[in-house]
Image 1 (cartoon, rainbow, N blue to C red):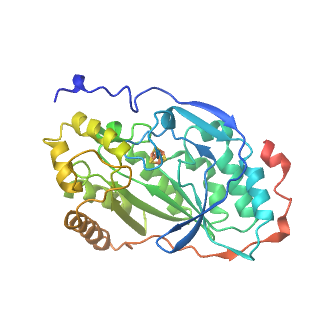
Image 2: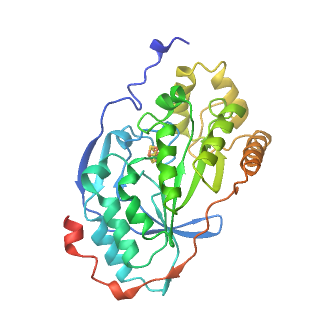
Image 3: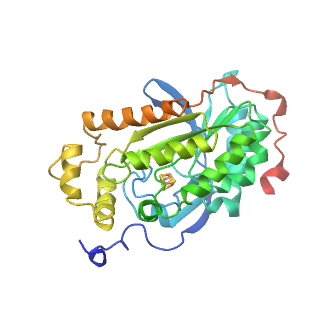
Length: 319
Ligand code: SF4
């Protein structure tokens, strides 16, 4: 299909996002995934990284990429919730699950940095999830807390042609790996999540090899991954991706891989088990072949430190 026939304007190529502040009543939220009880914070709503496969868009709205809300009171709200925390211990906090906490808005608002300072003051373990190299700004902040935090980068592709179409707001993988190397050199616990692996787009032997080899070169120990799940809004965007990348019979092949004929319903579809097993086994083989660990870096619940209540200074919030 010729590229000019694909209307991308209705989806993610809409220019720079606008950013608006908003007040939030609650920041720290519990979640349960496969018997794991976790906690998450999201200092922003929406994301300027514009990934076609984004799971955080929920009901698809182009506003998710185009209008970013900065939760301007995030640090105060987080501190208030930690102050009232009932237990003596606290599980690791995921920063963040439904947005990228180091997206361009962070340069203006610095909310992620302020929230990280709060977590550190209360001795809360955390994982940062990002696709960004902007996190380099906070390398020293994370380094001084490296006993109790891990940084996880999601990397989808090392192919620039694919990246520009699939996740146009993210930095090139070479740039991200340069950042990761600085973090591993600083002794910070780091991991790469090859996620999502996109059928017919990023699932080739060569692509997986390039990512895994780059992980090795960046001195990573923990690498893992998963295959993309499909949802109605993700399918709408993926159809455009398949056309732009000129994947032969892309839509028909996806219907085979994900086992659907008509419209995709709102719940997630997983890829065919055999396909998924083959790709994940291949990834695991490559990771272990490079003497890296095929798993998440472990963080455990820690005792919350009540000695610093109120000492995450107002000045820090206002800085
Ligand atoms: S970086 Fe994450 S939250 Fe942001 S658009 Fe991409 S997948 Fe969605």
